[in-house]
Length: 69
Image 1 (cartoon, helix red, strand yellow):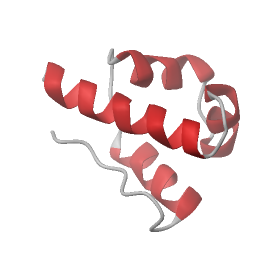
Image 2 (cartoon, one colour):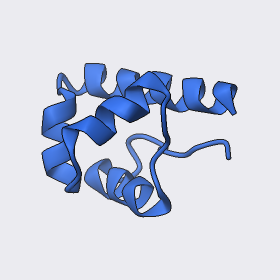
Image 3 (cartoon, rainbow, N blue to C red):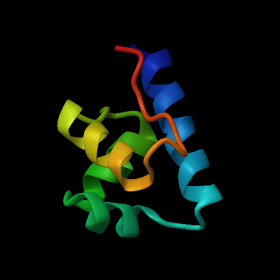
Image 4 (cartoon, one colour):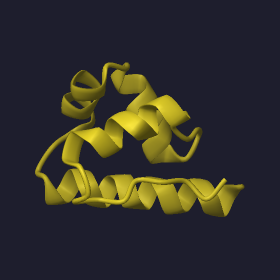
């Protein structure tokens, strides 16, 4: 499980860096709390299927958002 969390959080951090965005911006775009985004980035949790869908719809096929669960 820890590897999965690390892989997703690294990917999310890469995405935010590439897009020059921060967790607060992302939380507003997908309709969740900035605390939840920080939890994803710290590996404390992973996004639900709903949030993954919102991440995917945000940038289409530009990034492949998924978890390894």
